[in-house]
Image (cartoon, rainbow, N blue to C red; front, side):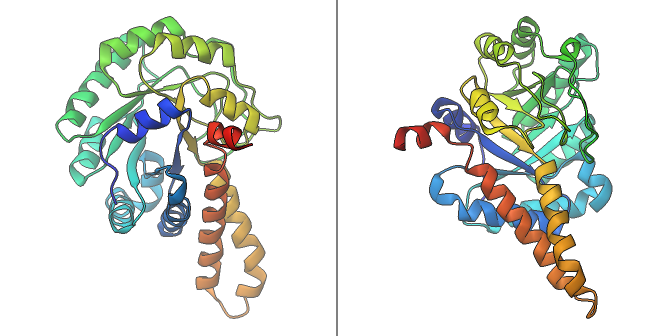
Length: 290
């Protein structure tokens, strides 16, 4: 079922949990994410299928939008469909018109005032559709689609004072921050600036979002959740799982040109990787039961 409104995001923030935002590129990744959401439904943690700007380049916007929305609507599990990393107001409007439950407007590359202006307009459009909006402040290094061993720069991290001003000026529902996180896997695990994250949490009255969570040590992830992060984006972890599933299956699939077994292996690997991530996003419940 499609997950509308901000209740799930706010509930996750209040409980010290985080909604997983899993990036989908094709049918098999959408299926794997949906299967993980259904398997994890008992945990009470909704899942977001992130069919966004970068995957649109591969699958086509209309095709991938419909795949994600149909899968979410037909599932018994609560699933949101989220537009990730969009810089284009026309694209945002098209996804809202199609039925997306949330969008991310990414003006992080713009000067502060221009980022505010772009974000305010995206918020205005989303309100007309009952969708919530995530924005980004600070520069996150790396590539969304390929791991490049990126390194975070302290000069590009989110400033807590600016974050407070930004949220007040734009009315966004969630803020993605740069606190040492990077897109993609890195040779050495990224280290989060948890003190900066705590200061941002103090300055900002909305849930925070952590992009680039693939490969983060669990203790770093739990430290972020304890400091206001209520949505966590995962992409590279699913990509690696998909490719590994395909790699292992390819030798047995090749003699009979068995593409179905290949696609199924990739789908199931995505499901298992997503389930593993979901298991790390409710630390307070785990600690309470320990």
